[in-house]
Amino acid sequence: MEKPAKKQPGAWVMGLFALPFAAVGVGMLLLSVLPTLYDWSRMQFWQPVNATLLAASLNSSRSSKSTSYTVTARYRYEVAGQVYEGDRVAISGGGDNVGDFQEALGERLEQALRAGQPVQVWVNPSQPADAVIDRSLRAGLLAFKMVFVVLFGGVGVGLLVFVLRGGKPMGQRARNTAAAGTPGKLEKIPGGVQMHFPAGRWWGLKLGLGMVGVLFLAVGALVPWEQEAQSDIAPWLFRLGFGGVGGAVLVAAFYALANSLRVQIDHDGLRTERRLLGLMLQWHQVPGPEIARLRVVESYTVESNSRRDVYYRIEAELRSGKKITVAQDLQGRKDADRMLAAIGSATGYPIR
Image: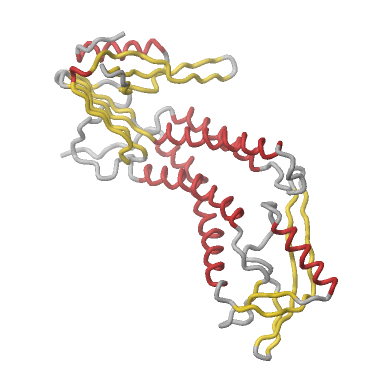
């Protein structure tokens, strides 16, 4: 009877890493993005009515990094002889500093209040007590929220699904072309070897890299969004620089943490499967005569304080010049050379 597969080392850490990302993304989607789209869609059928402003003000909240604006208003209107009062100003409540929407709307309402001019509000014909002054959909604010939904939610939910499924690929067959061996170790088979590099390997290093990405993203997001200095391009360059680097680092950390590699190399040739969260991302099948040589290549370097760790990979170089990774995340040249020699000895392919 086949023994149940053990959970991969670091799976629970991947789950803990994923939880806050999933919470931010899913929370933003369910509590903000979807309600906004729902309100906007139903408000397109509301009817315009003139209203009298009772109060209107543009409020600001300043911090060391930015200034947020909030518009508040109270107004009175009449529908079918019945008088109502409302205080909803826009689809999304609360303050923000994305674009100049809040400032423009606040100034317009304050000016109308001083001049005693009526303003147009949109009223729900089936429930006249529901009304709003501005029913426009703010694309900039929605896009800003969707960054959190897609980036944070995608990373978090994807990792959680992968961890809860025990790291097994969806639709995985009982016997893989490249069978699983001990993680990161050689397993001898007739005429060659097979290897398995599971997701979550060197998880501490990659979680640290992900946190660096989050930090850079946060720094970019905290750059003030004030519109008074639209001609000054420096804040935008700063925001794009830090945000872009942070996003790229975070995506790279996610990929490094969530991808897995299965390899089988023998006298018949090379077969590899690269998966991301269990989904097939890339695969190769190369006949033996096409393999020119195997070699060790430096992959990346990690420096902390006075320590410098170099990680290597082993590539199969084909006669066409194409290179295919057959082993990865090997710490130190000594271990990489030892694995290269073992693969060459088992398969007979040239090594260098």
